[in-house]
Image (cartoon, rainbow, N blue to C red; front, top):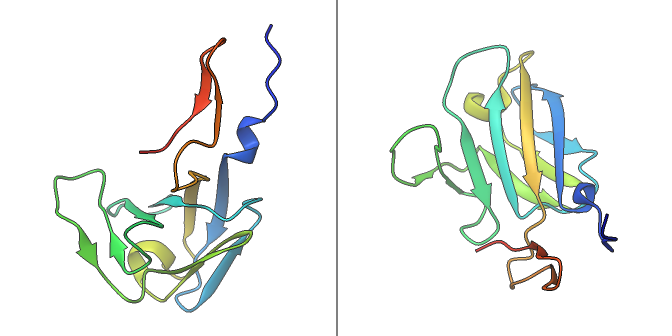
Length: 124
């Protein structure tokens, strides 16, 4: 098996959280995410995805063909160990459980690349 100098957990992490319907700092990601995909677990609603390129007020709904949306009370900040949510029930419904899939994408280009073994992490 080839040796790699990075671990997948350094670039991807899943975090479960409970909504509070108010400002909610989600921590434990392990890095500042560049791409966050959110989904309710205890209720049915659209998935929401945010990335550092579009910014916090712009959301995608990857489980539909909807265009980019905009809300000021969804994901409000990308933090050093996670992200902060506003009061929007699509991503922070009070007392309900949610999941976040978080990627460190290094929006400036390649993160790691090793051509010989074809191990690379890239976000474009």
